[in-house]
Amino acid sequence: MADAELVLKFQGGQAEAFDDLVRRYMRDAFSFCMRLTGRADEAEELSQEGFVTAYRALRGFRGEASFRSWLFRILINRWRDRRRSRRREDARMELVKADVESRGAYSGELGELDAGELGDVVKSRVQDLPDRQREVLVLHVYHGMSHHEVAGVLGCSYDDVKMNLSLARKRLRETMKGYL
Amino acid sequence: MMTCDTARGRLEELFDGELHGDDAASVQAHVHACAACAAEIAAFKRLEDVLRGAPAGARPDGERYLARVKERTRARENSRWTALLPLAAAAMLMIGLAWVLASPTPSKGTDISALVDEYRTADAERQAAIEKKLQAGGADAIVQLKALVQSGLPQRQQAAAVILARYQDKSVTQWLVDYSNREPASPDVLLLEIGSEPSDDELVGSAFDLLRSSKTREDGFSVLRKLHKGGLNRQAAYAMVDRVKGLLASPSPKDQELGLEVLRTVGVKFPLPDLVDLLDVPELGDKAYEFLKQQTNKDYGRDKKAWAEYFGRRL
Image 1 (cartoon, rainbow over the protein chains, first blue to last red):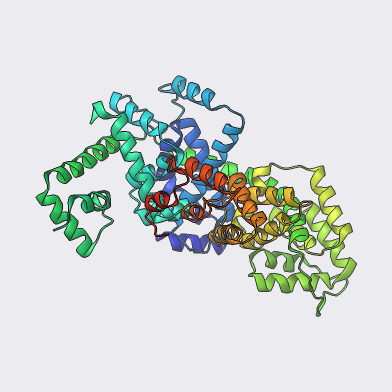
Image 2 (image 1 turned 90 degrees about the vertical axis):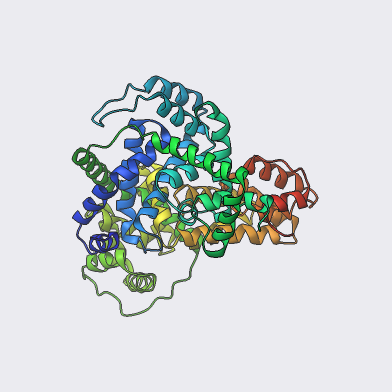
């Protein structure tokens, strides 16, 4: 069943249609949050918060974008909220420290963590990108969105996407020189 | 044949599949004939392969994940309505619309729950009609609405609070605020709700109106920050950008300063090229320059032409 159909069902009062949307997009949402945060526990919490927000806002969803883009927009907003709060608390260093300590430590019920060296390097370098560059890169490379789709999710222009993607690549080529 | 300089600027678009038709064909033809550009494409490919080869690291456990989402949703639903009360009061104060009382009115003793339920999913026109109808119901309707705020389904409580806020009646507003203060709610509930409401763009307009007076300026910024933080719907985001553009384009230095202040404090996503025009405006140039530098990680000083070239724009 198409997303739009599930959305209409939900808006018509069939709450279980939302479960299908969660099942359909939980992996996408989780992996997106994982790429942004670098932490499985945080990715789970963030992506679930995104679904909670989506549940509450879905009645007002007017289909201007696809459900997927809309969901990603919510996730981005939630993530930015978190980042802003953390910056205000000047806790970034603590976060980095916690991140390093948590690598490989989280198991929860989320399955296996990647232990490959190159994988860790990639994650770490992607984490080091400025926020906007990271957002653009993750949406484009890992979620296969076109520049226009990314612009829609992030609420910016096509040129912004192009510029930030280019900057991200340039930076990664420099910081991962020995691995390419 | 396309030159290397021209092709270089389009290689990434070609690699990303963003070029089509003749554009794609001409850049592609150049790449076939140019070893340096072909190497550049190959480098993009290597990077992409390495990036894609790194798994996200973990996968959610399906049914447990879904159960957690449901649990969180239920918890949030139970607390959301109290969070909306301050918004409802603020919306009433800011929008300041003069509602005209109209008949027919609900007669004394009529159960208004059905109207309140309908209000939740109605379009703006129908909502306005319901508000008028209930307002014409006088004190009896107010008593019933207050009762719905205090008990019943969370969605109904929320709708009743919004309707009460539209009364523009000081004592009703005060009652809402007092009630809300008795049960303070998490601010992010309130903010996220604002972002998903269709009336966001109205609130944006009202918030900008508040910015005009020094007495209410801080309130205006506060509302804008909350709106922005909540994830504006597209219409409201456009409204915000339009308002900032209007301020920046105004001949009044005070307006321009205010526009920059909104950009700095609210963090609204704004088309940066529009700021280039301000670089040589006395007193504002420095601020515009700092903002451009911070947002782009580039530094072309106060050179409007260089910035314009960077943004690929004609002055």
